[in-house]
Amino acid sequence: MIRKSVCLIIVLAYLSIGSAQQSGEDQVRFEAVKQYWEWSSYFGLDGLDFPSLKYQAGRSFQALIFFDQMPAGNPKGWYSSAYWGFCSTEVGICQAYGGNWDGTVDQARGTKIKKGEREEVALKRFRESGFSSDEDGPPAAPTVLTSPPANTPASRGGVVLTQPVPVDPYDIRTRRGQIILPKLDLPAAVRQKISNADAQQAVQATYDPQKARCTTIVPFADERAPYIPILNDCQDGPSILQIRKENGWSFTAGGFFQDKAILNRLAPRIRSNASLVLKPGR
Image (cartoon, rainbow, N blue to C red; front, side, top):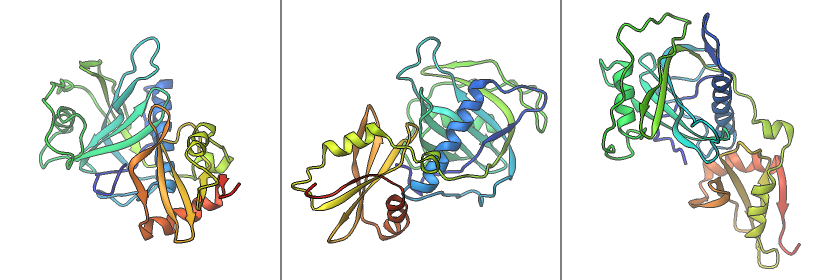
């Protein structure tokens, strides 16, 4: 669950690369993070949070971009807290997005760049904390991340891909580039009215229509959704439960919400995008 206390910033969709050429994997990761933020902006409990800058599509900034490498061969089951991320002194933060082998991005964590701190140094410190947010507690035992050489060429609008730097359990690559904030659309699952059969089955397995006192609504969601808000419409008022994609779909501990602001924003969106409706006595 990404709360407002976590330093978040939404980026990407386009990486200006000059004469360099993006690999297919790069494009897949950029698109996966963009899809994550589109989902979060629509169905996230807190929506979008911009502690470091006001979000404006088209705004660009220079950054040291980093991403973990998937293992060769069969990557099934692979997960990294550094699926994709960046450090930028222009916006004052490092941000890491956690993601799975199938391109499901499920969280974002960030740390502020200290005054006078270079991006390479900030990334090293961020890595040594296990890519924890500033308020997540004391860092884990440090593992050395070698910074790119000081004389590595970089120019505005260009990207230089450094050699892979093995860091157990991460294998980090870095590049310098320009990030341009994208225009965020409605989630693809909402636009295309896609149902997530596995998530629906998980909800149905816990719903007994003979004992239920609430109408339960599951919204449209595709396989890339990291979590899905489930609306319970009851006589004494609505509530929202959340299921997450963790070794199959399951309800999360502490995932019960009756906060008025959350309900006012999410309940109408869930009702208007109902993929499955379970009613008592049926």
